Structure formats: structure tokens, C-alpha cells
Image: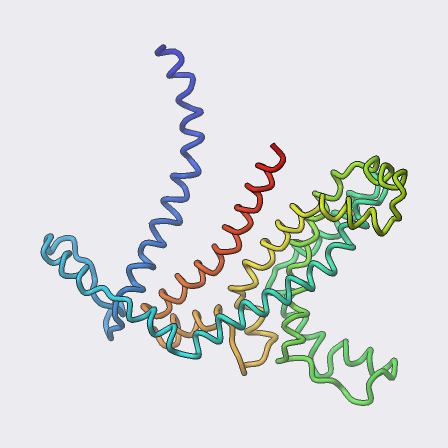
Length: 304
């Protein structure tokens, strides 16, 4: 029995390691954020009250707990600035994810249909943008989309436009930057799913009288839904909290939740409101994950 326990102890440690990692580097910091979100703004260091002082004794800690409130969350609901920034983030992420899916699916499908010897090259071409810094790639788009940039020069040379078009500081520039930056995150999970599909399934559909288009919608697309779900989540979740691309390429008329967080933390130094906004953002991001996990569980139960 003792030998068996010694043998299984490393396995138990290996199983517990991810949970300990998440607890130490996610739950504990998030607990601090939740505490600050329930505090009040103060002109002090740190810029919020109350501050837990473990050396002051249990009575002081109890008084600090009593002083916590939900005022910051009430402010988020009542102020249009925060409501609109959240709505804009969700809308921008939804539209961007739809565009990414529309572009990424045909590319992934074409990669999966290539000969096996060509697929590694196609995969490398998709991954190549990751070899360059994300910030440098966004600044490159600024040079391309500016008034006398490469795009306007090409359009003028082709006589598509009579005068330079304003691209920068528009939603169009923001969507271009988002789609360009996140396209590999959509292609890779789709390709991983489509590459596993057996050609014999399409041959069987053809033998049963299905046209290529009908075979795609009845066989290929349903079987690729796990890749679609993974790609949508990999794109939608980070786009909701995106800060760099909207700040550099989009206009200042309406800001997203990432920019609002930056302003509250570093410009207004309103840490409690910013922390409350971060908690709301996390709740928005957890919702699609929970929905996806539930759909996956139903699919597994149906397969059994």
C-alpha cells in the first residue's frame, strides 16, 4: 500500500499543479481587484479606502469589511459612458469575429484541402506574422492608412479615387487592424479541425446523391463546428478588451472598454471604478466560455 501511495503521489501533484497555479496567479490577484472595486475613491496612497491593516487587529478588519459597498457597480450602470463603452466593445468584437470567420474559414478549408506536402508551408505563412512584434505591425498599418500612405497612393495610381481618402481615426481602420491581427487565431483552430475530416465522408455523401455544396453544409460544416467555436472564442474574448488597436487606429468619438479602463486607472486614478469595470469585463468574457462549455457537454452527452 505504501509503495502504491508513493507511486501515485507525483500523479496527484501533477493534477493539482494547474489548480495551484490558477489559484496563486489568478484567484488571489482577482480577489484584490474585487476588494478594490468595493472600496471608495480617496486622494491618498493607495487611492482607495478602506485599506486592510492586518496589524490593527480583528476589529479594524471587521470595520473595513463593513465599509465596503456596491456604489461603484451602481455607477457603472447609471453612467452612459461605461454602458456605451461596454456595448461598443461587444458590438465591435461581434462584428470583427463575424468578419474573421467569413475570411478565415475559406482559408482554413483551402489549407486542409492542399496536398500534405504543401500544408506545412501554408501553416508557416499563417504563423509568420507572429514573428513580428504586435505593436510594430499596428504602427505599420498607420503608415499604410495615413493620408499620404501606401493605400492612398495605390488607389490614386489606379484612378479609383480622385483625392486621398481618410482612413486613420475611423472604424474602418480599426476593423482592418483587428482582422489583420487576429486572423491567425481564427485560421489555426479551423484548420486543425478541417484537416482531421475524412475524405471518405464526402465521397459517401456524393454516392448518396448530395451535390458538393450540399455535402459541405451537411457534412463538412457541422463536423467543423468545434473549430468554429474555438476560433470564435479565441478572437471574440481578446477583442472585447482590446486597447492598442482602437487607441491607435480608431477615432476618439466612442471608446471601448479597454480604453475606459486605461483612462480610469492612469488618468483619473479612480482605481475602485476601474476595478469594478474590470470585474464586469471578466463577467462578460466568462459568459461565452460558459455557453461554449455547456454546448460541448451537451454534444458529448448526445454522442454517448
